[in-house]
Image (cartoon, rainbow, N blue to C red):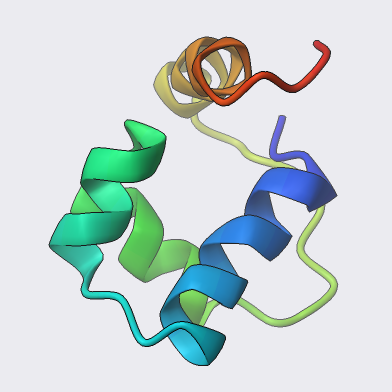
Length: 68
């Protein structure tokens, strides 16, 4: 599941800090494809339908210090 914190972090890094998809990929561990999809998604996005992304989200939360 996409956490709103992680989604917000990706949007903030891209729109406010002006980072590239590649830099966001390095900082979060998400793929550029996932980042691009999240940035194109409407603001209210709250669920992921791809099991691989859910697994990756859990790994990222641990890497960026968020609680699961």
